[in-house]
Amino acid sequence: MSKEEQQPLIENNENDNTTIGINYDSINYSMINEGDVSISNEIENPEGCTAPQASFNMINLLAGLGIMSIPYCLKIGGAIPSVFFLIVLGFTAKYTARLIGKCIQKDNSINSLAIMGLKLFGKTGCTVISTFFIFDLFFSMMANLILVKDTLHLVFPAIPPYVCLLIAYSCCVSLTWIKKLVTLSWVSLIGLLSMFALFVILVFNGLVTPNAPGSLLERQELNMWPESFLGFCTILGIFEMGYSGHSVLPSIYLSLKKRKNFKSVLNVSFSWIIIFYLMFGFSGALMYGQQTLPQIVQNIHSTLNSKTYFLGTLISWIIIVVPITKFALVMDPIAVASTEFIKSKFQKVNTDTRAFFVTLRTILATLVLLASILIPKFHSVLGIIGAALTSVTGLMFPILSYLKMYPDANRPLHYLLFAFTLVVSILGTIGAFASLKN
Image (cartoon, rainbow, N blue to C red; front, side):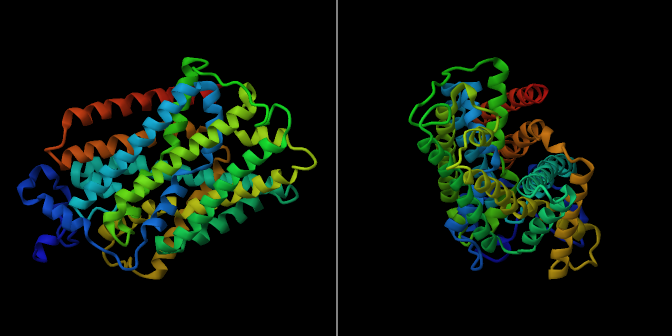
């Protein structure tokens, strides 16, 4: 294949703004055959991430602290519906992640969901999807920062909250200066091991506690079916958040040393996280049964004794470490989109320098800091925002993009899948509102 044939389907020519509104309806698809896509998939990045390193990033992205609500989901949503939708939504999220990869395979110039929206649906599509994914990620960074601040203040009550917030900001912003995701993957491994340590602590506490509640030796009964319709809706919103992270997928895909490994990265990451959610959920629910609280950590703290009190401090430090390891990974797509915007509007600015890289990410982190100061309890409504925004960026938008890019795709099947994700989004948002009210 010639060099010209290997260029992206739509070139980002800085001197020509006429291409900015072009979408895939005007492209001759006969020019884009399977061979072209295969060659695109063989592109290698010598300095990129290996498949295990990309998996570390992916699993750390998915395994948020929302995992602590999974046992509560089994209580209010029932074991049967919870297991069913935990698995179904997991594989649905994995499939839509794969669709994002296929879209990038067909056009290597796509490096974010915003660029994908621009090229497939024009400026309006770009504006809509950019708004959704930027708000989604920005609120996620806010929640991480506030969570670190609150937990630091819990561990060190003598330190004022605003000082804890500045300490949290310093820790988070310093990791955003890491330029390569291959380096950040080792930070993600720390977050991943911390989440696994949380599971080990849960099981250990259950084994050393002889009597219920809180004992795996004296297990509690589980509800097989939902306590109420609103309880069922609530678990859908929580599960959606548990599989969020699609906005970061273009960065992970493009960071791979061998892009053909993207499918295996998704298989390993989503399979691991589904199993982990099930293990964590059943362990917590069997320990506490009807007394399971929205955050399983609340239950653990209530059953600690003189011999296991140290676990409370250990859990607090895990809750501090995990959000810090996720902050830089979550910021990356926003930074990439901001860089593309600055390139298009201020062509004299050199966006390739180290100074620009650090400055941009510091400014974005500072905006998150200011938002956290102005709205210190804003994370309490993230369930509502997440249920809606995550469904759009992670489930619905990839389906629409794939159908736009691949006219020969099985359209009835994907329309059915789109309808399913839309219903789940609506029900999850209803459940989030109800949960917040309660």
